[in-house]
Image 1 (cartoon, rainbow, N blue to C red):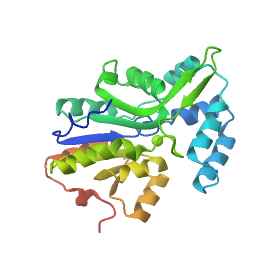
Image 2: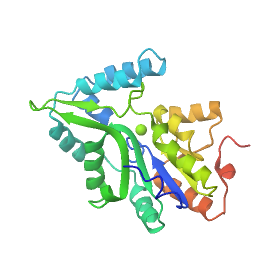
Image 3: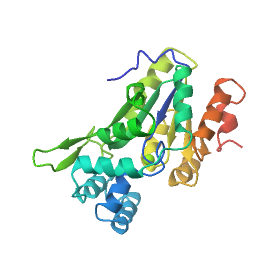
Image 4: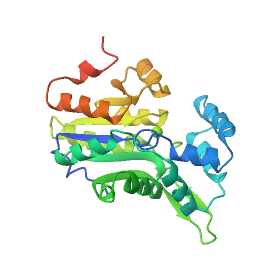
Length: 247
Ligand SMILES: [Mg+2]
């Protein structure tokens, strides 16, 4: 379900990646490294994605296929091991109080994201945070597989989720600010649809933002993101002030 019309008059919308951004660890990498074919093979695939010899979608499928564990056990394993960004709860409550929607845009699988949000942020959070992601199909014999959202080489082109909101904002000639928070290369296409990208410090995404002149600012935790969002929405700072590509 999409809320393009309902959100048109909000002062801001926060789009965010999930794995490695809302959470400290990437849950799919974590499953692959600990229950699937391991770290070394995962890094090999990662290099192949970066040099273009395999698509994200193919590599991601291979990673997930290497995990023999039933899906509900995978979820239990993640609930025990994955931690939340130390500032996320605070920004979630601030966004609620200020009527600012949060939309998770993820290549991960919806049941995992829901379980982690419920456990780490609170039971009510999954009714208040929209999730646009891939899904999972559990077969009668208890095997499982990822169900991709679209036909693109990403499996889920994140920019498609954001574009309608940007177009609605532009059509209404509103001052709404669109933010994106992310840590990975798959967040890049999404970031191009928003006004400012918060990029996790030290990640590949930062290098690409510099190269392609995408308006960005680095963050260590959602505490930094919240402070910067507050200063933009109160008019203390502009996006240009925060953009690390601006001199
Ligand atoms: Mg990520």
